Amino acid sequence: MTTKYKTRAFVFKKNDVNESDRVFSVFTEDFGRLDIHAKAIRKTVSKLRSGVDIFFLSEIEFIQGKNRKTLTDAVKIKKFENITGDLQKLKIVYQIADILDNFIKGQEKDKETFDLLIETFDKLEDGLLKIKNHQLAYQYFLWSFISFQGYKSEVDNCAVCRQKLNPYNIYFSSKEGGIVCKKCSDLDKESKKINSDVVKILRLIFKKDWDTISKLKIEPASQKLLNDISENVIIYIK
Image 1: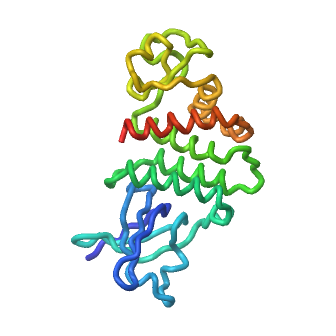
Image 2: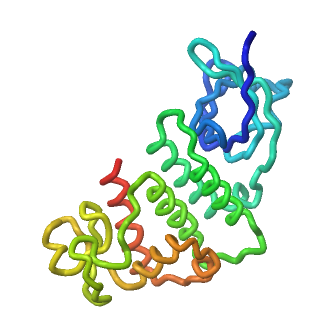
Image 3: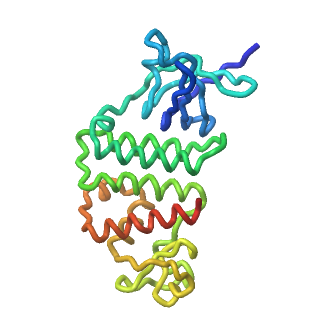
């Protein structure tokens, strides 16, 4: 007898295959990442079409075959229409999807990441929440996610010598695991000088202080610094 599995799943990627099939990459509450084959879902008569699509939160049911998992049922829980109808937010969620796709390859339950994913999308979807800088939602997800993967950066003291940081002479080193002082920055030629605004944002993210983060207005120079160290840490831990 074939066993059916049911779980909540967030769809972050889709690929069309054959004439009418589609493969969904989903992050699930109970199994972590799965790649699910949906047979004939691109046909207009498919009963699965309304229940699952890119950036849907759905309850899915699937069976495990010899070589693949096959979708048997899908019920939409949430569509996140305020996100998909906003080009700025849509760009951010594709960045989040890339992080999931690049860093999570195998099946392994990760409830922390699932909850973080839904939390981030819920905040972006909330039309009443006025976020001054939507890019911070991506940073909130990214730095929280890599912390869950065991790469939480040190942001309170120098990551090397553990001394108190001078806010006017601070650097970020992916190699050394966070913010470092001027002296210790010499240990990593790739370390990048940052400012106190970047440190403040990272501290707020690790404290999960979304209310304050959502109200921040960041100067372009600080935004660029934050983007640069985010890209560097992604490259380093990949």
